[in-house]
Amino acid sequence: MPKIGFVGGGNMAGSLIGGLINSGHLATDIIINEPDETKGKALTAEFSVCTGVDINILDECEIIVLAVKPQILRTVCLQLAKRPTDNRLFISIAAGVKSTDIDRWLSQNDTSQQQAIVRCMPNTPALLQCGASGLFANESVTDTQKQQAENVLNAVGLVIWVENEDLLNAVTAVSGSGPAYFFLLMEAMQKAGEKLGLTTDIAQQLVLQTALGAARMATESDTPPADLRKNVTSKGGTTEQAILSFQSADFQEIVFQALKAANDRSISLADELGSE
Image 1 (cartoon, rainbow, N blue to C red):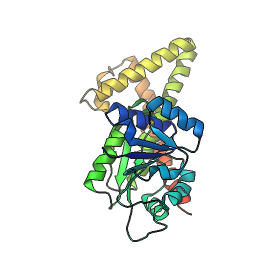
Image 2 (image 1 turned 90 degrees about the vertical axis):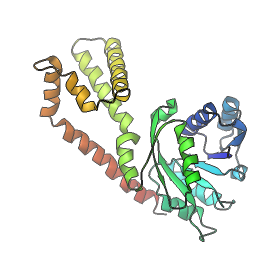
Image 3 (image 1 turned 135 degrees about the horizontal axis):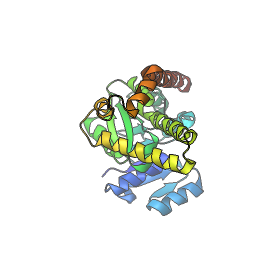
Image 4 (image 1 turned 60 degrees about the vertical axis):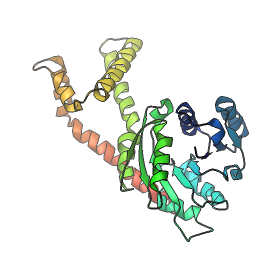
């Protein structure tokens, strides 16, 4: 198995590391560059992986996962540019930074060839190994490297490839930010239940279990969500009245405008982050 290096040891990196080890990757083949010694020691204690504060600890790694905040990715890439980069695969999970900008920063000392870069947009359920990640590979990524990237992200959930990097903005809008939309709906349903007389505890339990059950029905069935909705909406019943109320407020358009706002912000963030 190839050696995998992580720059950054935050929650998402920890989830990926745990998922990789659970799927059979050797802890001895995982190395983490984490400037916070306390955090590094905690990762070593939890996963038995090698950690260090200097980025040169990653020199022997074939795969480098860039698991840092977008605002410091440029600095990290400029540091990596001083180290060997030949035949390496770089996987970026930093939201909003284009592969062309990552390549430009990594190639400061050698502009003769494009770096192999996979951009990934995961979401927070990856912390529970049930996330959804959108991936894009630039032209320098080989088929073998593409499979390696997929193996890394498969450790935390579903992997979907897009052929056009711009589509990662839509992925961000749908799944990257998506968990928050469901949390918002759950929050609203709980508050509505309380207004209708339920206690906070009872309303919360009912909402959370309903969300879990609905998600399982949708994912464990070949029936489209629209048909699942129709199947439980009886003519003249309570569910129909609620659905009609949603539709009268143009629920579909509200959702579209919300996702479009997220998509547009993702585009503008990419321009801001890549301007240096």
